[in-house]
Length: 159
Image (cartoon, rainbow, N blue to C red; front, top):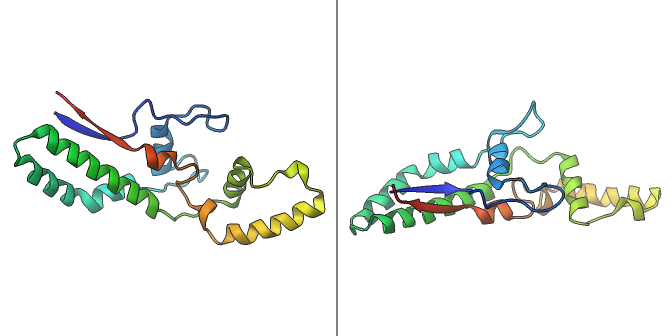
């Protein structure tokens, strides 16, 4: 038996922006980056493993003493899921590019360029620049819709 933790084929983003993308592929792109600086690496899986490997081993060795391998692997899977979620939530560097933040804002309907005059758009952008500069909420790397952090899961497989 074994346990796998991560994103499985059924975890897919829906909608026009993501074109039914695999969450696993998006997570991998975020972990390692893509292109020459287009998407910088924002590791969360490797730090989770480095920071918690001993805890995972200890938890498994305690749970295996019950004699129930499936129980021990399930508990380990839940623990690893939680540590990955925590690791995702702790990533703030490198910060999102301004263009990425504006794309998020447009995607979530925070503003619609077509309905503003040039003057209104300029004033609106000043307000948004203040908000974007704060690196809060919409500017949090790795969490846009929340689907990646919510869909990390585990499976216990029988060998």
